[in-house]
Image (cartoon, rainbow, N blue to C red; front, side):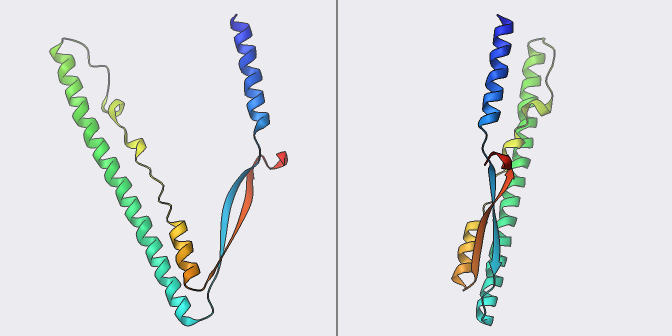
Amino acid sequence: MKYVFALLSIFALIGILAACGPVYKREYAYVPPKSSVGKMCTAQCIQGRNACEQMCRMNNETCRARAREDAVYEYEQYKHERRKQGKEVKKTVSDFDRSYSCNSSCDCGPTYNACYSACGGQVLQRDVCVAFCDKQ
């Protein structure tokens, strides 16, 4: 029975891998506006994108710090309960750490692209194959 399950698992994995089509990544190229006013405008777009990314990084770091604090608190509670019950403390603080969930994507690009276009610049996009390109 184990042999049949292993064989079926291998065939399923091969089927999944064979079904993988090409994976694309969207890339952007920027053509600046011709006027000096348009160029100053795009500079403000860049500042806005930088502020967006900085705020996102700060939010992620705040989330990680809070998650680490929560982990220490939960660990102390766990440790207290285990000792109160006369049981061995088997876990560590890292078992309670959920900071891995604090990596939100900033996604400041769409707003930047809209701003850049509104300033008179052109946003050119193209999709580039980055994996399984021979499956086309």
